[in-house]
Length: 450
Image 1 (cartoon, one colour):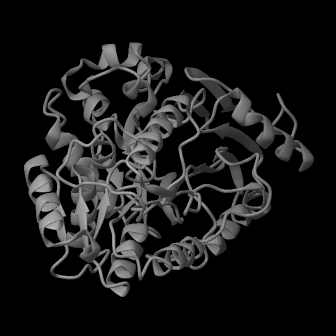
Image 2 (image 1 turned 180 degrees about the horizontal axis):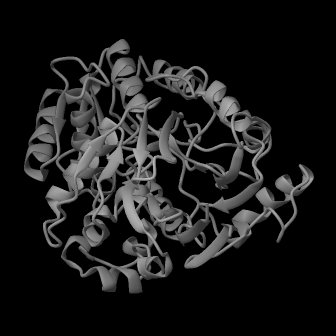
């Protein structure tokens, strides 16, 4: 059976992920994401109002025109998890394909919300839920099967999809870390990855996220970040001023820890910001997390400002606002607080806890620097880097290669500079550039089996 892979987006940057795999006459698309940095550098750009071709030209969404060179029919669109760099373009591109979106329940719910908030293209693709550990037949031949393998990442309900073909498995390995003690959900299913590597024809191709391939050792578990966060917040228990925390809105496990530790130190947690309300509200509604019944979640600016006024009237020492803005995004809550644009007043000595790292990209780094400077000018003291990554460090990559023993490897989720460390790692394991290690760019086709 002919096996061909189209590397559409995410092979020159961290963002706008999209890859298509053709097995015979059937095509499966993995991910359909947004490149957030290309949006952020344009002031007041509203992507939901823009045409897909304009978004392609500005590098915000994948240029999927290469799909016309694949001789087959798209049978499924499969996002791996709910981060926008993996689902953000579904509302703009999925209508071009007569195929369902197949994903885990949390990812499907976030995709549904994304589509409903952008009716411009009238996306009407079926949304099909599939749990980790389940399989689905693809196409009419009865020879191709889609499987979801549970992985751990910085968002809940993440999977690595595996396309089983007569020529072997194609494993789409974006994004994960090896977490055996996660705060929410099940550990990564390494046993299943090892089975896939040794059953039938083995693994024909492994497409891997190279984000942290230059970092030695292993990525710590989310339970390590939880203990770090506990230590920091407990150290503030006797502080009688304001404490504010920020993290990735989609990082439900981290939000859960912040809520619990706020209560431990005698403060009322409150979630503020549109995305904070969206992700945590969705996770609670789907029973992924059990928040206190009195936990306030406010996304609309007027309700957020009313909450800030109440906090100032009743006393900052009794509250822990958990807000958006960990990357210094211009319109996020923390940045507005830093500019003095909310009723919440920061005083000398107030604590601001960043339970997130800066995404290593110039736009984010500049905005975060500016936000921290503004916070410091108001007298706030910043606690940063209380975080663990959602991506594999080098030892995790070695472990995955040992488990899967793939015949071909395609590095993804980086630019050329970012690929270099992973290429070196693979070559140390006996792979060779141009033979079985395929470094590629956006818009290319790789023929694995003629």
